[in-house]
Image 1 (cartoon, rainbow, N blue to C red):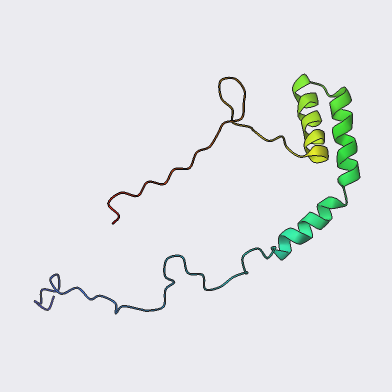
Image 2 (image 1 turned 180 degrees about the horizontal axis):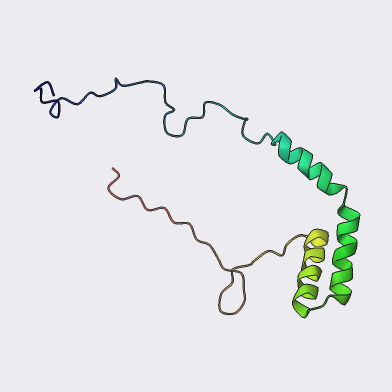
Length: 108
């Protein structure tokens, strides 16, 4: 030991201006640009669309369990018609009214 007390004088790295600010993007793909790997995978999976649909139909018609048949039927309907939307309603089942209210307080 050299007899020096280094505990009080810790070395700190100099401040760097190289980081991204919050919300700032510096690199990578532009937002909305599809990932090339995902595109390749999606194209490969689409080659089996007909077979997958046939399999779902077989399961929906003759699956071993009721849960499997219902799940396959739902998958077929979702692909054919899209997933159903959810409507928020009141106690009578009527669509809910959404009221937007802006209150300005202390504004002169």
